[in-house]
Each structure stands twice: as C-alpha cells, then as structure tokens.
Length: 60
Image 1: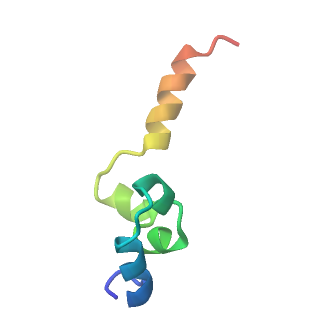
Image 2: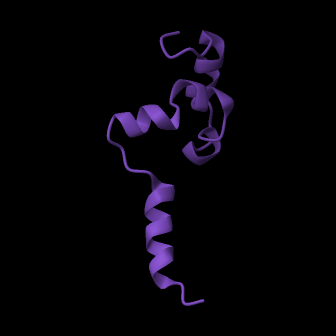
Image 3: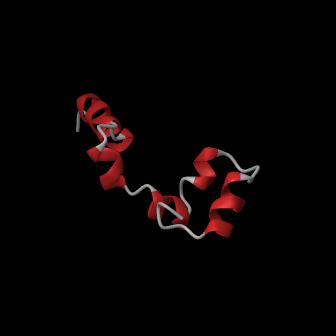
C-alpha cells in the first residue's frame, strides 16, 4: 500500500467498528501516519496544546 501498511490490515482498520481513538493507538496507524508526517503537514499537536494549557494552571 502507499503508506506502507499491508492491504489486508488497511482494509480491516477501515472497516472496523472501533472508534478513532482506539484505532489511533494501533501500530498500522503509527506506521501510515507517523507524528513527524503530521507535524510536517502543519497539524497541531494535541499533546503540545495540552502541555501549554496545563502549565499555565499549575501553582506548585
């Protein structure tokens, strides 16, 4: 397949009834869409946003 995931695995993930949060933790998703690729395309990091928001609220 184009993003390096075997066709059968891509098909089963695409037809899965599991939600996006469950599928996002799968090895196939990490192989097809690594964090570096998402950053390269300008998508913001939810972890980065979370860290910025929580750092402002900490007092200790």
